[in-house]
Amino acid sequence: MKRFIGNSLYFVIPFVVYSLIIAFIDPFNYLDGFSITSEEKRETIAKDIEPHLYKIIAFENDPKKNWVLGDSRSNGLYDAMDQDQWASLSYGGASLKEMIQSFWWATEIVKPDTVLIGINLNLYNKFNRRFWVEETLSRKGNYFTYAFNKYTFNATVALTKSLITPEKEPEPETEVDDPEAKKYYWQKKLKETDKFYKNITYPDQYKKQLTEIAEYCKKEDIKLIFWIPPLHKDYHDVLEQYDLKEYTERFRSDMRAFGDVFDFNYDSKLIIDSQNFRDPVHFNAEIAREIEKEIRNYAPSHSKLYRH
Image 1: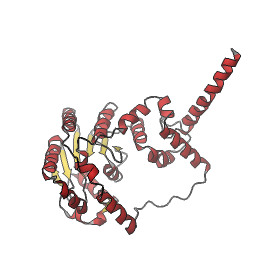
Image 2: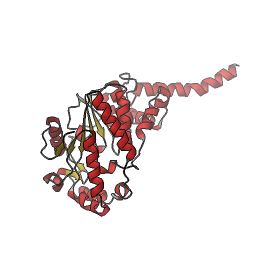
Image 3: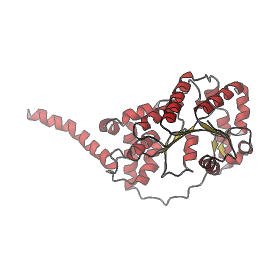
Image 4: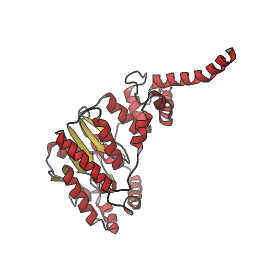
């Protein structure tokens, strides 16, 4: 019996020690304030490793009444917004499925005042179905699944290293302005259109789900706004090969049926100047501030506003 207890302890102790380490480091703030690491470090390190887990737990710990949903372009817009008033449930490379799941998950925590959803044509596609949000909700379902997944482990290791390694002086945050690098990534993006548009198919299910969101928002007196991020003219030129004119008009018509729409992706001075973009699908920080101001003030300048 003593041998059995001893063997059991040898088996259990490593799990207990590991669980305690996770609790003390708590890279994604699951325990909401128990961590010995700073919020700044967690945001810098853990958020980069798994933004879904970081943002979903952050929202749970501090739910706000105004939400931004979308992909990396909505992330770029959020950087220009009042982050004391707005929460971001936007994720790089997000699918429309993830946005819809995030919306309904968040409504179980708090009823919003305003919901801002960023959707480009490439997301309005039956086959755009990434499901990391679904996996993330499972990972944070209880402490065991939170502690024993690779993202929490990797973030814990990285944060632990940061605690024992002398910190470097932070460099000022500026956008990278390397003409050769920009040219390379610019061309790279222009060559990736097939994976988004070659087999694009009308998303009947997504339309139904967005209609349900629109009806819920109307019933609950929630302001629902859609915005269509700008794409540079070079990208528009490449898209001509896919004959998307009819599909694009149907997409815009559907968006207008759901809520107010700010459309920044039309033939304007904004999409012609390459200095407004980091690459053909991502605008820079200055344009993010312009977009935020137009939406906040309901004063279109670089966009067309369609009121629901």
